[in-house]
Length: 308
Image (cartoon, rainbow, N blue to C red; front, side, top):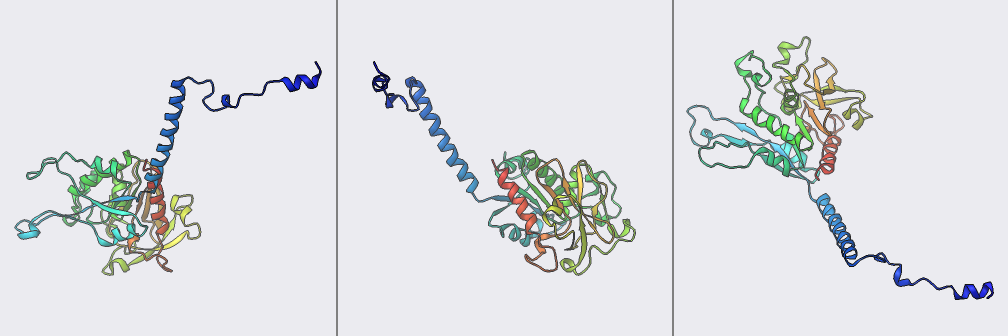
């Protein structure tokens, strides 16, 4: 037989034997189909989760009634300042105020805990408000009016640690910046004017119109977000500030005039940042005060990455 005849008589492969289930048992074929279907459904589910609108929690401010009060003022109230909610929502995300929880309520008990909020929400904003109680960082009160809000401290410290434990990002503003430092063993200046030599006025009657310049720490997160603005102008509405740094807390910005700490970061988490100023009072696109949209976007980007 010639070589040509040999080629002509070579059997062609059976096309029916080249499929993905060739040589597979019925059980293997079924498992392959189920696995493929599961992967497709998982991919679709992941896409839906990723496309879901972010839900950001904001810690509450607490109004404590004065003795002898009547009517609504006799009740403990929880609220948030409008500007902070609107600033976060400006990036098309949902905002929910996180109420404090009380397992010993005299009226209505609940098994819901702050841990449940940390599991369900995508990130946490700690808003400004009352002084932090010196008791919360093991210091004595130097003046009665700086006694702070110990009840809110306990609520927000638990809330902060639950979000960090859940791997969710945290942005602390003013009081929230100070709370992050205290949460890791740091201390505060109870009053900048009386404790920091040559300090500028960090608070006055101008309130959110009071401002000063800050310098971003070289190599820090904020410096990477504002590479073209190592020095910037921010509002200043605080008489207290970070003193000694807590564990694993690094400085992100300082006041250019008196070196008061103006921003910090907890370096063991993806995003736990504290700003001593109020970014929600800075107009987007402002030619004067620092446009903090980049900080908000970085916070929300981390929220998207850690939502799974």
